[in-house]
Amino acid sequence: MSAATTEIRSSTDVLLIGGGVMSATLGTFLQTLQPDWTIDIFERLDDVALESSNAWNNAGTGHSALCELNYTPERADGTIDISKALNVNEQFQISRQFWSFLVRSNQIPNPREFITPIPHMSFVWGDKNVDFLRRRYEALKDHPLFSGMRYSEDPEQLRQWMPLVMKDRAPGEKLAATWIASGTDVNFGALSRLLFRALSAKPGVALHTGHEVEDIKRGENGRWNVRVKALHTGQSRTVSARFVFIGAGGAALPLLQKTGIPESRGVGGFPVSGQFLRCKNPQVIAAHRAKVYGKASVGAPPMSVPHLDTRMIDGESSLLFGPYAGFSTRFLKKGSLFDLPRSIKGNNIGAILAVARDNWPLTKYLIQQVLQSQGDRMKALREFVPDARDEDWELIVAGQRVQVIKADAKKGGVLQFGTEVINSADGSVAALLGASPGASTAAPIMLTIIQRCFKTQLPAWEAKLKEMVPSFGQKLSDNPALCEQLRKSTTEALQLED
Image (tube, rainbow, N blue to C red; front, side):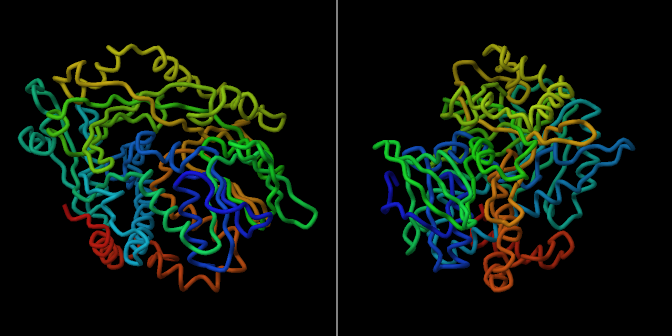
């Protein structure tokens, strides 16, 4: 999948910017719903899925709130708020349905190329955290989306679930964990490549790698004129498009600003980079099979929740611990140091300064992370793996994430940690900004874009959408029977019985 697949059209129905899982997902939806439309995809690197979607640039967790404690905050009265956990899990079930449709229609021949069943665990220590996890479990265990979750404080049971974590641990330590078999590890890079491979084989679809979008301007006819540069030849040309999707990861913000749509005003970005420790010892890797999530430090962003992850990448098992946060002014891993300063405009500087003023704990946390030594990182790892040896682990740099900053009437500006769709009032252009839970929720996010931007086509598409996503228009959390039925059918289609 390198180089352009066809000559670039001077006009197209749909123009997708970015060769990651978001563009791949939206392109697949639209091509299935409207096969007679032309679709052009532009990626500035020489292959797809080399930035945020790349397997080594994200945690690969099928984010379904089974283990991520930041999705179940504690209220002031001590009760556990599970509303976000239900929403995140529901979104992942939509992704599972969409992927199952692609497997059944043979657009993805083998689901094990991108998704693997891996138990998801939450792990805490100390009286206060154990009490929190117990109450979290009680709040979730009877909900149909979380059926099968188990809880234990028994060292013997914990040793069965996570032998590496329990090995050589001091006796008498107050520990607790939840365990659920229905968790997954997802290689979003492999998924993106599978989607683009199937998409590129369809008539009217063209994938262009090594092409950078330089500008996006609305023409007098209402269409978008997108200036694209072929990086290997230096040639620029303009493509006219009826609909433009900006799914370029961190680069989405500056491209959105170029459109000049009113909805882009007051929006800024704050880049955060990630690092992981990767295990080099096959014996240690083989001793652990789970995704074990802990609690974030005070002031840490949600994307920095510590976790010890079994990963399946290209058929091989790996073990990662992290993430450790870092800071760079780049918006992409292969971006420019000027990305952040160039994104600061007169209409968003107020929001950015307000966020800087109100988020000192985050700033302090990032400074501490940047100044960490390898010894500091290993100390954090040993809270999960007490006998971890320095020589068994190496530091790798993961992807860049750009957190969304939005103008706010009361505070001046707020920092958001989720994903955000910003589209023009007429639905002719849309951009995806933000980070976690990101790729796991690509399918429901693209359904949001379809509902916002293709309102006139939606009635004609509804039957096909329900074929692709059977729960479309319904909430699984309100329908236990449908929830159980779809969990079983997607487990079968995606071969998730371990």
